[in-house]
Amino acid sequence: MDFDECFNMPLGEAMFSLRAIRRFIDKPVSDRDLSSIITAAIQAPNGGNQQLWRFLVIKDKSLIEQLAILYKEAWWAKRKDAGIHGRQDVPKDNLVMKSAMGLADEISSAPVIVIVCSTSKGPKAMGSVIPSVQNMLLAARSLGIGGTITTLHDQVQLRVHHLFGIPDTAQVVYCVPLGYPKGRFGPVSRKSLENVAACDRWDGVPLHAI
Amino acid sequence: MDFDECFNMPLGEAMFSLRAIRRFIDKPVSDRDLSSIITAAIQAPNGGNQQLWRFLVIKDKSLIEQLAILYKEAWWAKRKDAGIHGRQDVPKDNLVMKSAMGLADEISSAPVIVIVCSTSKGPKAMGSVIPSVQNMLLAARSLGIGGTITTLHDQVQLRVHHLFGIPDTAQVVYCVPLGYPKGRFGPVSRKSLENVAACDRWDGVPLHAI
Image (cartoon, rainbow over all chains, first blue to last red; front, side, top):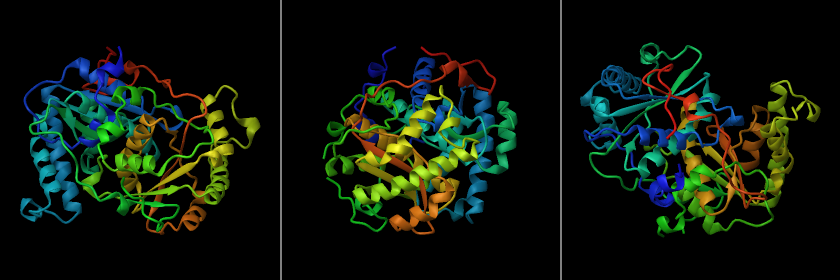
């Protein structure tokens, strides 16, 4: 298979329109596209080429529904940690949080959820797996498929491990719902380059956008 | 600036030829390219759009040389943790480690080193910053510029913070040398898809390559 042709969108277009997609139309993602997307993921750099990643591609509707219940519990457990105890506490102007709350309600509508695991535990293994997820999202984007990176709360980890047969020695890094977007891809909102990049020192001359 | 045109390499070509580049020719990277590359980096997803990243773009030759000394010390400190005490202990057939050892010797030949930081400490902040680094490497690749992800050892962290004025509240996530490659981009060596991806369960039906 020629991956240049499979993912022939210009890199710039993929990177600059990779908005998080949290709502999906009712259309399945083909096995062929899922294989291509995960194949792209595993081209990413990783520590010492140890390839500590394992991708569980969840398409079974009943499993997705069971995971969705745990996901929603986990999402609210994370909010509780941050002092938000219910919908009434979600700031009206926090669009990111409102959108994420929507995903917690509706993640079961995703035709696919990829559970990205590492085969060993700890932050090093987690870090070594994460670049593959960016490849995964870019590859999906180029096929018109959207998704977003989500994490689980410790409160549900054991049950997620049990549901998917994930060994104790491994860890879940991310849950990534994938599907065709309800809504559009598009640019993201970011601080300007000057605010996040500097020359030679932390407080050096800001790097200016071209 | 039109980033579709700036990064017009097909996504597939960028992802599937993103070999780690650890040796560089003596050619500077332009400020324009560095700005474009970091601008691409910050389009990446990040937790709650908190944008905990900060990119220190090191071009000053004297600073690169001082960092190179610390980098070499850190590299060997990591090997020592793994029971490797000197060049004689590096397995001859471990090409990844030999190449990394070469970088530890020669990182000062990189025209640029990007120190990728997070503005707070801990694995969550680290994880939130990492996808941006994959965008950075892909954007660089599309401009013919190579690099590789490297980490530092705790043994040198304080001195690196001091050298670049990095506050105690922040952390170094990665050091990424960038430059025009001595040698070629090309495909990477990976386990097959069947070995790292499964349907619906950890031990589910393997996902097959197309």
